[in-house]
Image (spheres, rainbow, N blue to C red):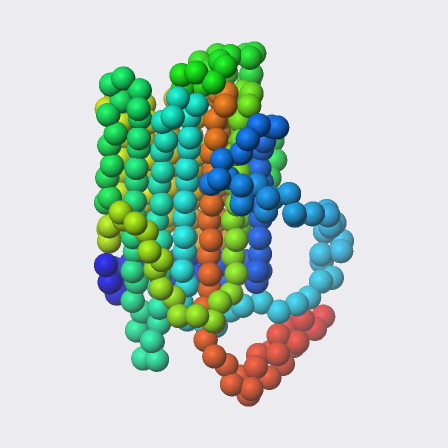
Length: 303
């Protein structure tokens, strides 16, 4: 679906938010126990293990200077979102979407979007339904009422709770994982990088050219949904054992924009992942423009 900028306000919002984040920024958080990890989690989990972080105090950061990407440098981007949940009884929920925004030489902006939501529930009465259509920390409350389940059923534990993370508000990128249970594997992964290739929406088999999609099983215990709109991007999976969400909130005059990934698991033997990839295309700059930009940034860094 092609849309102009006025019909796809989220395009500018995502671009502006991305410009506030560093080039090649990468963040990941995962949970896991020594049980076989499914293929869709293997890449994200391996990525998280390779990241090393070292805390830097405000006294050091206050004296750091460097270059940044201004919004006028971004000529397009591709945003990929994917959330997946696999329950021990074989039920699965998937929400996936992609947004590609490009700007031509006449400064005209066009956008393409694809979305897909799928729920498959093989249990009796669980007829499948398909619709096409930062900061890491211990946040909120987690209560584990003991070992429940041995891989049978949905793995949900009605005596365990994982709450509070959905109420956290953070500028920039946040990743929150709350787990109350055993034998779970999960990951939050977000990647932001620069790419000189022209933005093109990737191929998503079964997806439609619609800004939103949703799906659920017959009794509504498992749901998947994704939506692109002027108020931001939202992805949500809901299962008897918890929720997985991803959101992009546009910035405004009162606050900066935010990218948030949240996993809440109150159960056992759950396999869940949130993945976000944002590729920014920078416009070609002449040598004179590069020199002017360098001089301007140098002047701004003078004390």
